[in-house]
Image (cartoon, rainbow, N blue to C red; front, side):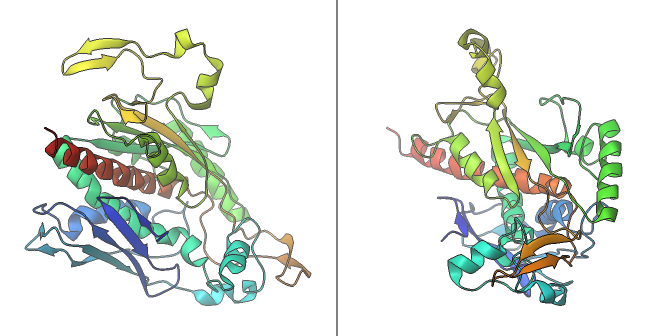
Length: 363
C-alpha cells in the first residue's frame, strides 16, 4: 500500500481533504507506553490550519481521538487507530474547478492515473492527509524520547528570499522555534517573513521556503544498508510530504565544493566512546547513524493553488482563465515544521526497533 510507511513501526494513513475525517492506524507500537490524546494533540496543534493569519483561513481544531490500541492510558501492543474529524469542509468551493486541472497541482496526474479524482480539495494529494503522519509521529517521538532521549527540532530557515541567521543545532529548542508564528527562531528574519507572507496572502499569491531539522542523541547503529540507508529513508520520508522539491543532508550540495581533506570528519575520543570533530556527514556514515547529530534541509515549493488568474486549459484542452477558490496557505513552511519532525520520528523509531531486534538475537 502506498499509504503505508515503515517496517516494524508501520503506519497507514487514510482520508481526504473534504471527507468526514482523516487518520492513521499504527502497527508495532511497543506495549506499556503511557499514551493519551494529550500526548498527540500538541503536534497536531502546530500543524493545524487557521492557527495564524499567515496560514489558510480554514478553521479546524484537529482534535484527535484514540479509537483503539490503548487501555487505561497505556498501549496494548495492538494496532492503534487515531482519527480526526473534518469540521470545516467546503467542497462547494471547488465546483467551478472540477473540469480544470490546476497548474502544478495533482488534479491532472490523479485523473490520468486512476480515471477519477477527488472533486474537491485535492483528495489524498492535499496536505490535510498529513494529519495521520503527524499523529503517528507524535507517538513515535514519545517512544524515542523516553527510550533514547532523542530530540527532534525543525525550524523555518527561509521563506521566499528571506533567510534566517544560522542556528546552533546543539542548543536550538522548540520553544525558540515557536516564539514566532512563522516558526523561525531568528525573530528579525521572522518579522520580515511575516510581512512578506501577509502581502502575498492579500495579493492571492504564494511562496516557498526551506525547513531545517536536527535530531540529537541518536543511538549509534541505526540504518539498514544497502537500500535502506538511514539517509535514504529520511529522504523518502521528507519527499513524501506534499510540496517538497529538494532534500539534502549534512554538507549537502555545498560539500561538493570541498576537498576530501576539508570534508572528512576526523574521529576523536568522547565521553561515551568515539565521535567526530566535525560533522559534514550529518550524523550518518555508510547509511548508519554514528552518534553525532543528524541534520538535513527540505525545500518546499510555493503552494500551487493561488487566487491570481492563471491561463490554462480544461480537461478537454479548451483555453480557460482559472481563478482558483478555496482556502490555501500562502506559504506552507510554518505548518510543515511539525510534519518534518513527525516524519523523522517515524523513520528513527522504525530503525531503532529493527536495531533492537537485531541486538536481542545476537550471540
